[in-house]
Length: 439
Image (cartoon, rainbow, N blue to C red; front, side):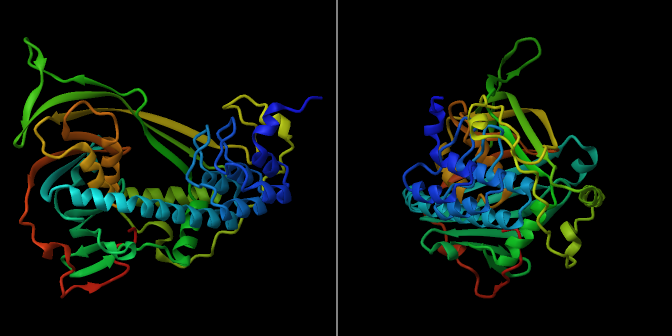
């Protein structure tokens, strides 16, 4: 029988599939370790799905990417949680964090150089949060966020620290990025009420990683993304009888308004790794959050570490059967999936101004610096879309499945008199490394 031509195309995948660690070790430097097969799986995906622990460790040691999705939209970490081997999950979480740091370090010199070239400025963004859930709408905050930029430094003052569906943490917070400092010292958060500061940690402790593994192993595997494939922009109209394109001032800026159509939040979850007891516990945690009790996972009580699950039955799929399966019809290699997906359409508007002095590219660089704040990372994802001409001075975007934010760039001025003291930690502030545990 002639050898399957696909057979030669994915030599690393084949070694992993067949559990041939020796050949994998000898060939690993000769081929692209990040190559995807017809199902979008990398060699690391397959190693995880088939429980090939030695292959997993070998691939990670050679820098196999962890933040990569297959055709079904799942990462090696998602597949590892499904398989349930604790050591594999821990290794992937560590490597994922290391690769994220390395990517940031690679981008950092360019980011700092770009910030330096940009003029110094002061900018104000107003956030108004709204929800279609009446109870939630009553407690949603608004926030005016002030941003100063000088040289390679940025300071952001905000009153909104963190949020999830039911809990909003307020405060008087300043976030300082100093591009001149080494990475471990460049990000600092000030709590101006308590006169405390925390350096945004560059690396997690072992304890934090093991806590994260416990949470991953006892929660749904989630994948949510804003689908931008079918998005279109249509000029918003105004007037009852004589319809015309909507144009208004947003602060001091002339702006053209657009309706955004086809914005869909797709969320998918898997729970084949969870026991009936896990499901009951998770339901109780969600109910207590809904009632406003925000103690969160494990309620601060000491708890036993999650043990590895009993592995799923060994797959009896052959390499030939796997590699000849049509794309998107991957044979089952692990547990039977317990899977649910949902999608929600959003109506949104954006106001684009030709007058705004900042460009979209400049804004993206500023937002990259302050991305540790969840709502700013959502804003950055939105601005990365192909927008109509101009600068988005007013935007409606979904932040959570139940919450939408209206963001208005209400003030902007290039300035050369920004006080350098703004980017220093005041001398009467004390360091508290755990003030903001999520940062």
